[in-house]
Image (cartoon, rainbow, N blue to C red; front, side):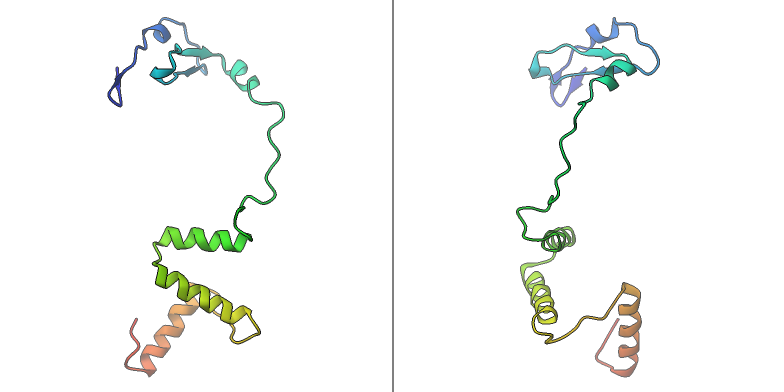
Length: 126
């Protein structure tokens, strides 16, 4: 069988009898390891007895979770450098010294307010 331009020999795994629920592990061809078949019970026992502790600060090296979440959102939406800087500036205006406040609580509220503004001001469009 060809996989990603490499030939893989599965004949050794097909000669092993399989039971319903068995798990076949196929290793990368360059590992030189043959496929193995594990009984479901055996495979589940192979799980680590002591999983690593949950990371209490998975957002590191960001200073805060909010910094991480903002960055993830900016990346996900394809925000430009200028757009990200403008939004960061807006956040800081709202946070620092009460220069301003941000009261929109949802997309629906934003769209409803924009609709009212477009009815009152001809230069505002939806």
